[in-house]
Amino acid sequence: MSHLPGSEPTTAGDPGREETPEQRADRNWNELLQEIRVMQIGVQIITGFLLTLPFQQRFTQLDDAGLALYLGLVVLACLTTAVMLAPVSLHRMLFRHHHKPLLVSNGDTLIKIMVGAIALMLTGCLTFIVHVVIGPGAGWAAGSVLAVLLVLILLVYPLLVGRWARRDGGTGSGGPVDDDLSGSSPTR
Image (cartoon, rainbow, N blue to C red; front, side, top):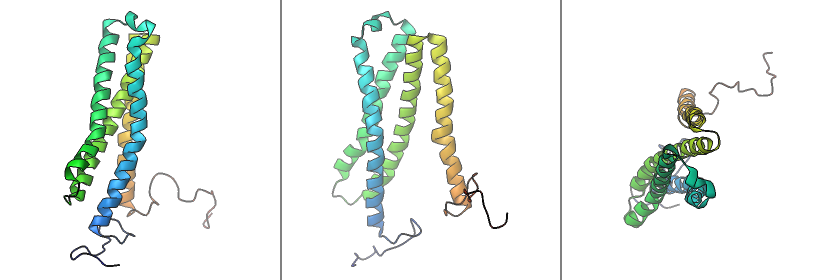
């Protein structure tokens, strides 16, 4: 395989991979696009759900707090969609300008913002639905519980996995679970 000068294969980014910086940037960009595709469906469904609500009969019975919560969710859904489109816009602006590493770095930041925005949308939607179905107090309680769970799932757990990976050198053998899942080990 021939390489451009200064783009010799390296394993500096990912142990076990021999790829040029350009190949790594292309691979990372493709992985980011896959993550966006996964999130896109959920955001579209939630946004569609929110946009149909004013056409429902019970919508006119919303109290002021419910209406404010609903409008905040619509704004959040629109902003989340805009953040989701930002990597595409960025790609269009940087296309053929040889800035793929910059694109990947900014795409990574935008995806982290998307995850946070989606978590807020989920929390807000649960709060809103429970608010309408049961009442405001139950809505805020349900939303608070979900917010805590989402922080644990989407922030604390990935931080712990990152710590375990750094501790064991990325071999995947770290973590709170015993490596021998079969329950039998030669020392037992």
